[in-house]
Image (cartoon, rainbow, N blue to C red; front, side, top):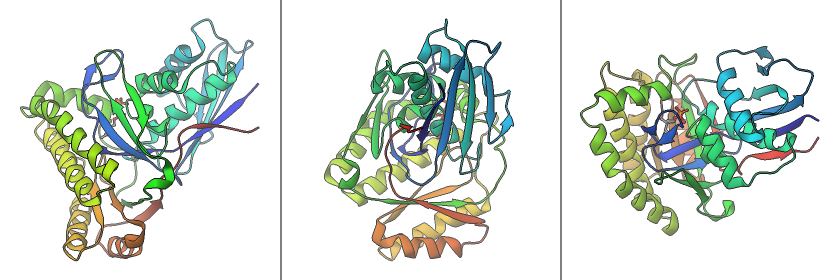
Length: 319
Ligand code: DP6
């Protein structure tokens, strides 16, 4: 029987950048994110004994590049003796552009695959398996504020607050469309091999995590803003100092940061974060969202805005 699941991308406020184990895809650092509500990936998995191989379509078109990762992920969820699967993925936002499409895709995939094979696995197991496919995907298995502890053996994720406890709005400023020059997975391996700042990035992550966890616990927006911007800029400094350098920003990325700095100076509750792409994510207090939206819309180079509250983790969709 075909089973469908939905997951939303998440935005890291304390970033995952670097792998402790490349083969198993274990992160070198802990991270903290917010799961979004209005962007989503829906994934349908149908196990079929008659199929010779797994098949994948993304937004209706056959897709080969992701298929190996999907097959490995299905093996881990359903066991390697499983029937082959027909997998169909659809997203309502651009793929491969620094908007964490692999996070929502693999979070939805593990939940749909588990449903298709009888629903045997715990949420913690599904998050671990999603993380083996794409580190950030483990966080999209859960909702709201999510902490991912890197740990010595394998990752562990936990939801920090009930969803309604601290509503925030995320406004994404799209500054460029189309796929990025280098994917985050290979970029972070390059950083570990070549940035002189990589080891200090890893060494300082627990301090940033502790600060962000306290900020969430205390609902202290200014504290969260300060540590999230610092952590983001530290990650991009590691990228910039990799060899060859990894620079995802464009003019408009910088313009958006400037807009957000101006808003902050006027007392607006907003901070920025940027991932492996040129889009700027403005995290704001819901009451300040209108001011942030209008300032970003007027920022040179911004193509369009997307907006979302915080949303729940990955879940099965009823048939
Ligand atoms: C910059 O989770 O895409 O978005 O594990 O290789 O699939 P892989 O990497 P991925 O990396 C995300 C990097 C980031 C920061 C973050 O989301 O924490």
